[in-house]
Length: 313
Image (cartoon, rainbow, N blue to C red; front, side, top):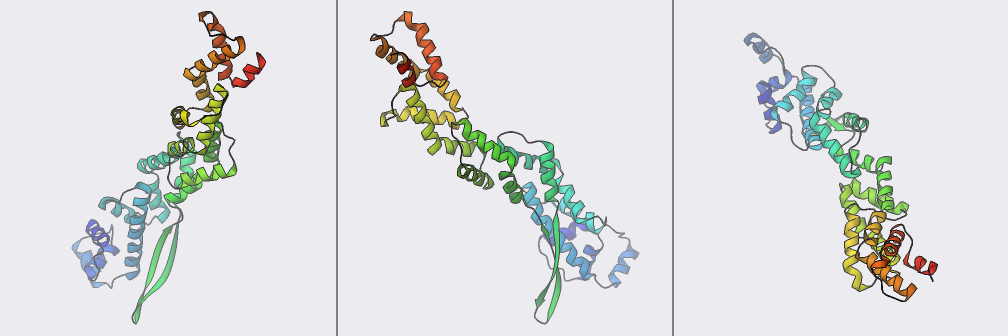
């Protein structure tokens, strides 16, 4: 009977008969013939009907928001029964939804997407507690010469609110600072706020990192790195190298890791042989291998081409 009732409500079937009203009012009570006859002779409890409808509306809002899907018929019945039949609080009914493993996993996944790593249980528990808070309000809906009392349950926090609070919290701020610092950038407040806004919109850590790496900051870092190793400004002919460096930053490499990679790669090999030519006036030979490797290490450590040239001439 309860399942049929809730299915009728979820399908917005009009409750015009005393039989359907009776089904809402007597969720979880004795359904014997004598009891049913007594109920049929009793006037409908419209306050209970209004309350039940408000609870169904709340469930229809909460389940998609927190779990990303609608409530099943069984879940809807259990949600309403928690309050109408078991006489528990609305907080208790929400608690049974929010503290499921399904909800926990969805919140944890949202947080991890912003930070790039798993958050601790205390952080998720605090977010779950917020999602259990709800406000009950009453009003009056007039229709012609008549009217009805209305009841509305409004969650105080939605998943969007939780995401926004977390995006502008200390953990994500620290993650943004580290992200940009690792890219060789001294982040400004504008850089940090811009990144937090993207997280609040639902973007992931990887998405924001990639946008920084292929934007202004990544372009500056790649050109600075090339200039440090080669001793000259980047040109249009270097676009392939620069794009590869940006890809490296976008894939999570730090500026220092990228510098070391390039210093010990083709760019570094070209740079140290050119340095030897300028310093000694000759081409490198096998006997210069130790010196060449030493200079590559210096480039990888942050010493620039021009510094090495100045120290050796």
